[in-house]
Image (cartoon, rainbow, N blue to C red; front, side, top):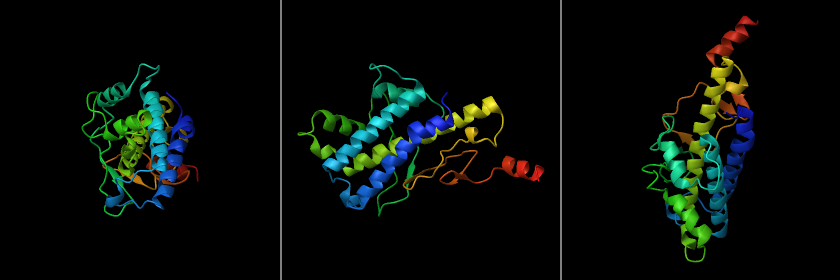
Length: 214
C-alpha cells in the first residue's frame, strides 16, 4: 500500500489540477444544462487528460499492471470491491440547474461509462466523433475521478491505521489534504474531515491527546 503522502503527490494533486482547469473552463462555458452538449478542442483535451488520470488511478488502486488491462478490468475490480459503490451519487456544488452526477451508475465489464466511450472515440476517430468531446462527458469523467480518489484515500488511511494504530497521525487520515470546490459524495462516512488546505477538524482522539498534554 502506498503512503498517504504518496497518494497526495501522485493522485490528489493531479485531481486538483484537473478540477482547477475545469473551473477555469466554466468561466467561458457556464455550467448550465443547455451547455452540456458544447464541444471544443479545449474540452476534448481536458477529457483526454482526466481519463488518462482515471486509468492511472484505478490501475494503482487494484494493482492492474501491463498493457492487457482495460476498462472492463477496471470496472470488474470496482464491482468486486465492497468499498466501492458504483451507484454512488456525486453532489455537484456548482452549476445552475445541472443535476448531481452518477458517473459510474449501471456500469460494469459489459457496460462502459458513456464518458469513457466518448473519450475513446474522440481519441481514435477525432474527425468523425468530435461532438462526443462534450462538456457533459468531461464533467462526468471528472466526477468519476473524484469518486475514485475518495475511495482510494480512505483505503490508504484505513490501511495505515491498522499498521500504526494511532488515529491522530497525519498518515492515517482517510481524507485528502484539501476539499474539492466542485464535488461532494452523498452518504460518505470518514473518520477525519477536511477544513481546507492541510487543515482538518479535530477528532475526539486529537482533542483528548491535546488535553492530556496540557
